[in-house]
Each structure stands twice: as structure tokens, then as C-alpha cells.
Length: 241
Image 1 (cartoon, rainbow, N blue to C red):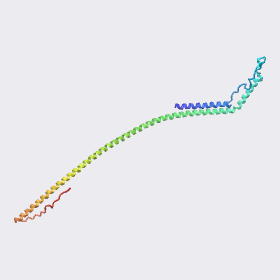
Image 2 (cartoon, rainbow, N blue to C red):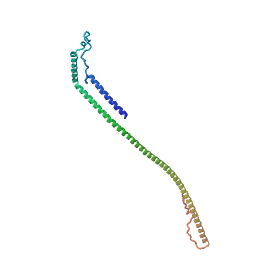
Image 3 (tube, rainbow, N blue to C red):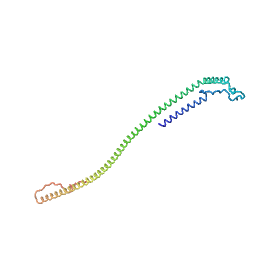
Image 4 (spheres, rainbow, N blue to C red):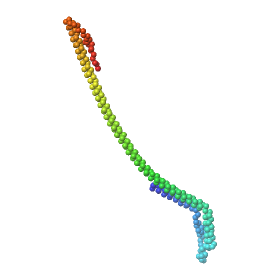
């Protein structure tokens, strides 16, 4: 704001200097009337008559020399002023226009100063609003980043937990398969053993039945008709894995 006032003062000084320069040039060029020097038509370089008897005789005659000179001086001044009236009016009009222009420029500068002050105030307000908005955005960004970090940490924890649970399930699955395989093999072996015992028992029954039949026939008793089809090796069925 101070810089703007300094520039405004400097501009006013430049305009005033320009007006002063125009006035000086107008006087030098004869555009502005200048009062003529008195008695400029008289030649005072002539020596006074030293032989005069009276000092009064040494002075110029007022009726012959001074009065006509004054009349001519007045006429010259009137003619000079009349001849320069148009130029003087033109210069005065130009000076008035320049003065009016200077006033308008000063008013424009004042208006610009007011506008600049308003813009500066608005800029400060906008800066404060922008800073507040940036602060809110930073808070939101920090909150989002914290949520993302927490979510990533939770995901990583869950991933590790799930991986451990999957590994434990795989171990349990392998153990279950191993136990199931072992249990099935033991059951099959046990069933094969039972079947072997049954087959052996049937073979022994068949053998005893044949012995009874032969014994009955040899003693002349009634024939024992036992249809026993148990043969050794006929029921040799075993379960296999």
C-alpha cells in the first residue's frame, strides 16, 4: 500500500514538472505575453552634454523624449497582447485540459488505490479461507491415511491368521488321512483274520462231518447224508486294501 502511494505521488510530481516545462517553453516562444521592458527604445549609451550650464539641461526633455516613448510603449504592449490573444487562449485551454487530465488521473489513481486496497483485503481473506480449507483437507487426508494404514494392518493380521489356520487345517487333514488310512488297514487286517478263522472253522466242521459219515458207514449204521460243500480253499476270500 505504501509503495502504491509513493508511485501516485511520483506520477503527480511528473505531471506538475511537465506543466512547468510547458509554461517555460510558452514564455520563451512568446506564447504567453511578457511585460516589455520600459524605455527599451531609448539609447542610454550616449554621453550627456557636459558643457551644459545647468544640470536640468542635461536631462532629456519629458515632452520630446519620455512621453512619446511611454505612449509608444503602451501601443506596443496593446498590439503585442492583441496579437498573442489567440495563442494565449490556446495555451490556457491546453493548460486547463492538462490540469483536468491531471485531476482525472489523480481521481483514477485514488479509485485504483481503493480497488487495490479492496483486492488486497479480499486476497488476505482468500488466503485465510484457503489456509483453513487446506487445513481441513490435510486433516481429512491424514484421517484417510490412518484408516488405510489400519485397514492394511488388519488385512495383514487377518492374512497371517488365516494362513496359520490353513496350515493347521492342512496338518489336521494330513493327520486325519493318516489315521483313516491306518484305521482302514487295521480293520481290513482284522476282517481278513476273522474270515480266515471262519474258513478254517468250516473246513474243520466239514472234515469232522466226513469222519462221522465214514464212521457210520463202517459200522453199518444208517447212512448220514450231509450235503457239506466246505472244501479247503473253496472259501478262501479275503479283503484287500
